[in-house]
Amino acid sequence: MEKKRIYLASPTMHGEEQEFIKEAFDTNWVAPLGPNVNAFEKEMCEYTGCKHAAALSAGTAALHLAMRCLDIGEGDVVFSTDLTFAATCNPVTYEKAKLVFIDSEYDTWNMDPEALKRAYEVYPNPKAVLVAHLYGTPAKMDEIMKICAEHGTPVIEDAAEALSSTYKGKQCGLFGDIGVYSFNGNKIITTSGGGMMVSDNEDYTKKAVFLATQAREPARYYQHNTVGYNYRMSNIVAGVGRGQLLHLEEHKAKKVAIYKQYEKAFADIDEISMNPLNPDGDANCWLSGMIIDKSCKVTPDAVMDALQAENIESRPVWKPMHLQPVYADNDFFTAKGLQKNVAPTKGDNGVGWDESVGGDIFRRGLCLPSDIKNTEEDMELIIKTIRGCFGK
Ligand SMILES: *Cc1c(COP(=O)(O)O)cnc(C)c1O
Image (cartoon, rainbow, N blue to C red; front, side, top):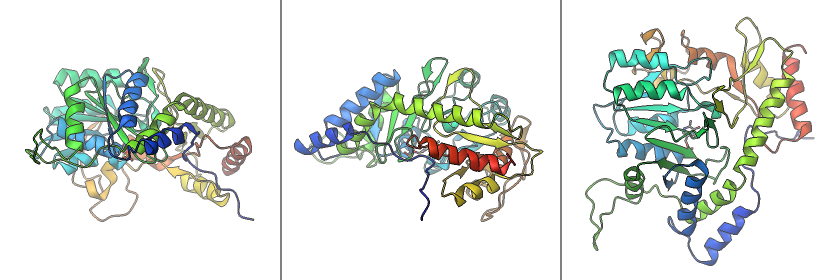
């Protein structure tokens, strides 16, 4: 018999989503605008505490529009978290600006403030700093914001994985000039696909909506003074989001419980540590992760293979951007300064090797199944399988 598939993170629907969709159908608001879009923005503002929001077709679209809002373009430099999903930084490349990657630290796996300082020594005038909160764990925002403020650099916060995570009591996504959330299929709440830009500056969210709807000027005829996009969220999709938002806190509680269960189950295995949680934050634990000790011979690949044999999905930690062939020519800073000749050559599909923290976490870490629909039996099987890899 085929073994039951256990997922990393899959959508969890509740029922209210369909009521909002039905309302949209009944009133024929089947368009990239409508009452659900407006209400979803308002409800996200109420939930997060941000002043303004723009509902968009994807988190990536929100990040792209953030570039346009801050006038990032050719000749500009943008500092970005290195250990993250490519979607964080690709929009910088869409606008032909130059990406400079900043290494992570071991305390939260996020942007290292020390490495950020090193980058400023070489590039004193970046146009923006792009900070991600990996797997829902808040970055060291006090330190990062202080450095950026000293240099007067705007901050874009990629909180795609961190909706409902807080740092010192404030929602992730609200620290920067612009914050971004994603509602893709595996995120803590999903609309199938979608994203949102948030900001306390209404100029940004207004500009985002303008650009997201083809940059049509207010005239009877079609007048365009700048290049726009088709990036607005549809009223159907927003209905799913409204239904999901009602269950966000419940999703978070379940994700945190999964993390705690793993933590407890592996407490006696010295070779394993869980992904760190920022003590100044309250993480949503979107994905639980673990890292294997340097001295241990067991590889993440071996653990993933053992899980796969039980039809359990797991995933490597994001491969750092400085090790990606597409960004082979970009500068990369660790706490020690500019790293030379660490990147693979273009077209190289190898894993790459260097002394960076992000590279080290990538080589030793993996993401564990964190689906909130996993049953007690599922969790027991996952835990038993992983323990077996370490002879327990
Ligand atoms: C998912 C994700 C994105 C992209 O969001 P989409 O809605 O899929 O476009 C960006 N950054 C990070 C860190 C993500 O995890």
